[in-house]
Picture 1 (cartoon, rainbow, N blue to C red):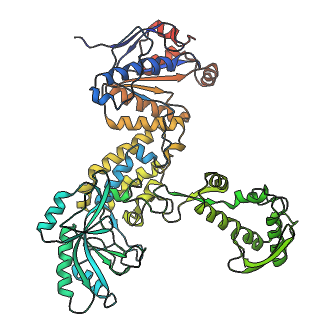
Picture 2: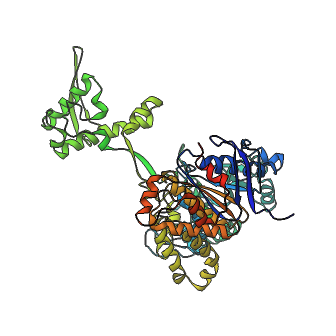
Picture 3: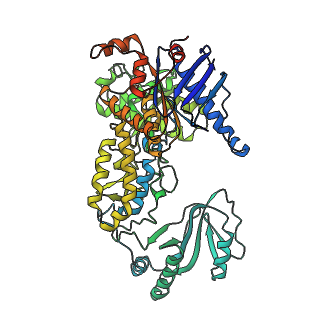
Length: 595
């Protein structure tokens, strides 16, 4: 059968199309232009793409189809010459706060692999590279504890992984071990717990129970070697003397990465350590979001030209309770300031008093509740600490929603906005950790990646060569579509429609697919004129790889006038032929203006 050279559409009546017939050349870059409402998207997305995707999904098994959204058959008489279709629209940006430019383009996945394989851990205390810890160093650290200290020596064989682990329990019993600690509780191996394979578990083998005293060094060294062999170079000392309700103290010793000065250790350097979407690598304070909510004093006092009595403090402004007025009068009497002064004219000490409290100083308050007068001497809590406490303690959704009006986002104080644990941020390449790399612009990241090889050893370069190649190519794609100003840490939900579309376009180029029909929706929207040539070159490369590329592009008299200042006016049909050497038939030209 001869290869079909055209996508034939006959009798397209989707939305505002009126029986359109069109023949579109395959393996070309084709532009559909026209006024808003002329039917560009109806032809490109709702007819051609919808039918291409529907046919591809129907070719799959019934089992696979149940997981996919089936598109309805478009209102068209006949379409032939279709390939599997991929739609890249403007309004497909993920609103998930965990989705970033780096994760969407998969560059971050390669960066995680790069840092896990050739990264060097540094001690946060000394700033020096962390060296391997010998068994003797571990023994010395334990013997330095107070005499009589009771502890368990554990081998963490399973760390935050799913499974039932029946075979592992049986094998440990055959090796002579008697007890394990599973998810925080001790069990005898004679009767191991039944684990749900759908949940993550932590399993530690109890290698030895020790009491710190002179003469146990040899036994302790042997036990450490056993634990290190079981857990791939990791051992844990867990103190046995724990008060009720408290978590036991656990000290991790690693044969690979440990700081002898501060005791800082990294259990293992794996790609998941650098993932802010996994509990193993995410910052425990912000849960990997990189942001935290706080009560913003600019929202608490939005208008500094008001006085305290006029409602300068927004959370108190709507309240008519005499309690608040009497509280302000008591504070005014104690500290000697004028309640009728504007907030901006009050001393900084008074502003800080209202916002953050009296900081331990007791103040005498006098309250009159309908004729019943009483006095109390106490510390003034402050507006912001009061709202923080109430926000934590309340079970009322309405109260939380009211207080959230005075909250803003800021970078997490624990991780500095990098989203990761300190252990992940301690691993560096060329003096930078992964959080600093993703906060560079795309162009700066590309320059850093191109210079990284010079800072690695010969062995590290052998390991990193293929990874660096993938990262360079993907960063280069983003530069070529005019996104060099973005950062990889930029949240996907903050991107414009044109930016998100070009990011997906760069990802498709990196996939290297051929024989695919790509349908784009105004990919140049929001793009500076100087970057249009680079975008067109990218689209032509996609076409030259053996794909058909179709674009719905907006065209108006305003755009023609703008172009006429530099070049003679060009018609939509001539533009289409110039970009994609399209041989669209006359019905297609009528379709672009058909309402």
